[in-house]
Length: 126
Image 1: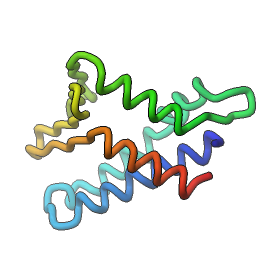
Image 2 (image 1 turned 120 degrees about the vertical axis):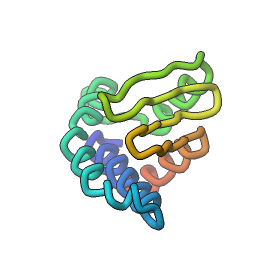
Image 3 (image 1 turned 45 degrees about the vertical axis):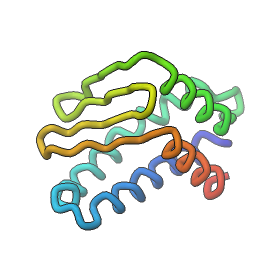
Image 4 (image 1 turned 90 degrees about the vertical axis):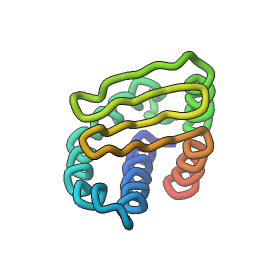
């Protein structure tokens, strides 16, 4: 798959998930414009990472990349990373958890969630 297709697919999927999370949740709904702007303004970082793993033609075996990433994420020791002053990303053997203390929310993504994202992108952004 081309880098551009993967990037657009990931961004679209994130916005789709954000819409679902904002539906019926006042805090997420209220922060949705800010979250969308943050994604838009910083998405080039994801694209830059994808460029590092692309071949000379700008192609990536996206299915293999996601499968290998899932294996790597969920088969390592627990780790916690700060995402600026905004949130933390916590990895363990079952899920990636994003915690946002300022609104007392967390979002958990397990391997099935990553597989759903992969299938969505492969189906819609070939």
